[in-house]
Length: 212
Image (cartoon, rainbow, N blue to C red):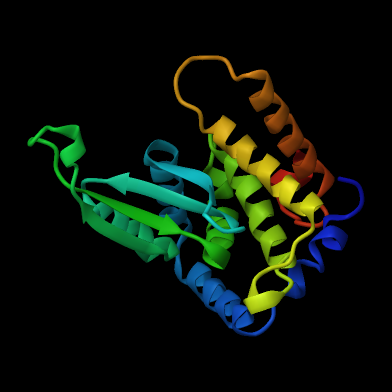
């Protein structure tokens, strides 16, 4: 859509107030305590075992997250130690109908901690760099669009909701598996996301976005 994203989302990246500011300080402290080698390890782990996702719940919320699943919890505990987030599990896998399969664990990272982790990992990401950049932009856009309405829920324009849905489709298309070619709809979604990354490079400054 036309115009600056700040205008449509209801404020700038700095629109977050209250406890959100405290949480951003905590994220900054976490970044300063984590070494480049640890971020490089995490980026490599995510390239092979994790995924950047845009989740839509039953209500109006659409939010980016980073997730990884493994039967070895020690790996996910290290992810949590580096970037934060939560580790869930163990989860049974009875639906596979194979007693040899071990229970699985899942690590998830969201909110400001996700944006901070993406900034730190970006130099080492290769095949999932675009998904990370889209999630970063969507995270800040979600913060900007969080104008409180009834019951404290965000009030967003229909145009902005459509923008988020298109970005979600782009991430899903980039995460597709197999050797098949993307559909025309998927190609359109990816092209739209790449255009938005370039167009909003100033709104969400980042070396990768600026070079897009």
